[in-house]
Structures are given as structure tokens and as C-alpha cells.
Length: 200
Image (tube, rainbow, N blue to C red; front, side, top):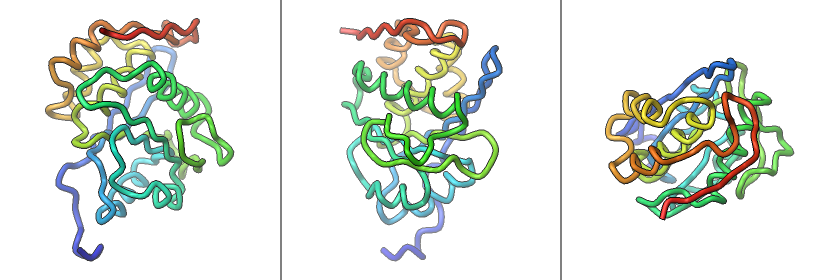
């Protein structure tokens, strides 16, 4: 299929923005997985929302170097569909969130993410982290919920907040996981001793 024939996305990306009590603004773009043939449309949508990093949490469906050539840093954080994110994924994800929203975006020399190269901080405004799984309804929204919880939102509120912006997001099993999730880094917006736990 020629790129010129692809002009729109079947599922529109969902912007999730929130400012915590400390004034820290978080901005995420939850998407389904781009494919090689429609990646340019996703990248255009990312630029529109000042995306500085794309996090892929599913199998590869497009070349990461195309994303990086567009000036967006790429992180690989794949984990099994329907499962809770493992501790190392949570750490990597929170590293990305902290680096992006503490400093205004990743630098060209940023290497703290899991896999992939660096990227620019975008064209002004609040930086955004794009995150996607296959359909953009499970793994990606779970990570966004974790970021919101870590920054002061209650778990039930985080789920409702995301679902209001991304219809069908977060299934019952994922909801149960998030209801039991405890902050590992932030209490009231400040850094605390890291505690990683998992649900068995």
C-alpha cells in the first residue's frame, strides 16, 4: 500500500493531561500500535501534541529508527499482554516520566530509557510521552495510570480519568492490579525510597 493512500487513523490517539497538587504537568498520548505503512500519520499526530518520546510496550510493528529520525526518542518496554508490568518495566517507565516532566523533555544524550536512541524536546509547550500497545486499551493505559498514581492521583480516579479519554481502556484484571498498586517513588509529588512490588 502506498503511503499516499493512508490519510487517517482508524483509532484516534487519546491525550491524557493532568497537573498534580505540586504543579507538575503530565501529558501522555495513548495510541494503538502504528504499522510501517501508517507510521507517518502517527508521527504527524505526535508532533501535533509535542511528543518527545514514544514508548512501545508490545511487539515491533514498525522500525524504531523512523521514529528517531522524526526527532522523537524511542523506548522499548515490551511486556506480556494481560499481565501486570514487571518491576524492571515500572522502573524504566517511571525513569522516563520523571526525566520528561522534571526537565521538560529528554536530551539528545539521554540514554536512561530501555532501548533506543535519544531525541529532542519538541517545539515548545508541555512535552508529551506517547505510549502504545497493540490496541491502546490495556498495557499502555496501565502505564499511564501508574504515572498518575505516582504523582498523587488515587488509583480509582486514575482509571476513571483515563477511561473518560480512552473508551474501553483497562480491563477488570488490570483494574484489580491498579487498585492494589502502591506508590514506589512519589508521595505527594516528592521522591521517596523506591519499593517495587508485584501482584502474584
